[in-house]
Length: 393
Ligand SMILES: Cc1ncc(COP(=O)(O)O)c(C=O)c1O
Image (cartoon, rainbow, N blue to C red; front, side, top):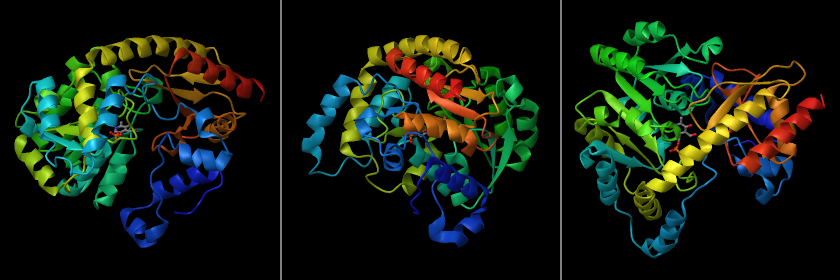
């Protein structure tokens, strides 16, 4: 891939890429860059000459309290398992996840992060047209296009906390064969009411559309477990629920996620997954993480308190308007013409603080940034650096 020298060049690449059709992407071959995500420490290190140990990353929304100590210890101990292939069926981990949700292990497929599973779903189901409420996680679009499909987007309403018009979603279901729904949604933090999701489920069933519900950030919602659609997806259904160990347990470098769906569909997906996708360390870590309920509960309580503080401080910061969020990140509108998201991200990176420039999301523009919720000390550093930049304009 072409080496880029600044954040501006990186985001320009992404903007260019997002305009390409699948055919163009194939035609341009080697020049196609990957979607932009937060948390790209190596690239920022290269571009800004920063020392990794001094970088504070608010661009990826990962719990600042993890990984749990027990998980780190288990990973160290599992080094001895490396001379053997991992269990390709992830049987022990599937049994533990199944027990956690009180479902059957045959309703579960474990993957190399939920991203691998998103791409597996589109590769196997090859949707011709996918309905994607935006702005949202960019891998849905990428996975659909790479599998040869088209994306139909439904725009959220910025004046209504980035909720989506239900009548538009329901009205366009007859044009698609798959719908991706992220709840709570990234990068907006919007949590669709449960009644709306049930309406969508019924309508998808009627239209014989697969509904993919991405619950990656539901762990951070108070009472999120009760709001999950895992149990519904485990019945014979057209629903696939995606879950991840990445965010809550702070394991993005390990790669571990799973999906829940009807047994026939899970078998079909599993048949198309290459063997040994989930390494031995990840399987052991997942087993241990599931046991640590106090870690999960305390993390959610603590981060929700921190989120309140951070939203209050962001509201008092000139030029920034934070949106309410059900997740562990906050979307902010830049309400000054003196700086855009690219320049603000650049200024902050020079200070060793990474924030997410949201101009690369379909449905957002250069007036939006997203920041993760971290510890009080780190959040205070974020606020003081943002104020330094914004007050200096
Ligand atoms: C909404 C959403 N879903 C899924 C993922 C992928 O998570 P992972 O592949 O690490 O499990 C992300 C990562 O940023 C995300 O934001």
